[in-house]
Image (cartoon, rainbow, N blue to C red; front, side):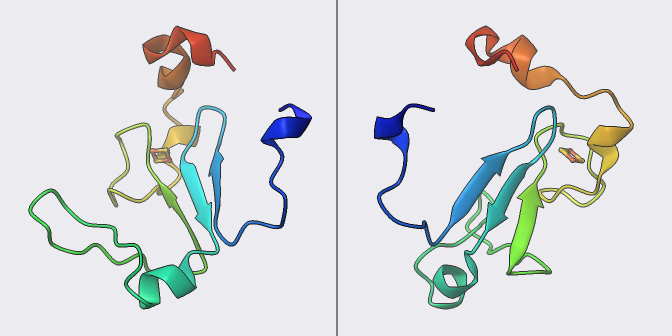
Length: 90
Ligand code: FES
């Protein structure tokens, strides 16, 4: 990351893409509770994370608790990001 990509202040919400793992979301509790952001199914039904402080969205597609990560990616050899988006090679 270049210096120009650095945030000017500490972000309220942090999204972290794990190498060959989930999308980790931290700090969204306030925004979810206030309704400023919502996680929903395609039919509009809200999806509430069990832990609002920090949760992870599955990217491997094999979690038994979709859309949330249950750790299955550690056992299934998930490396799809690099295959689907070659420029993202990790
Ligand atoms: S990314 Fe963790 S179970 Fe899919």
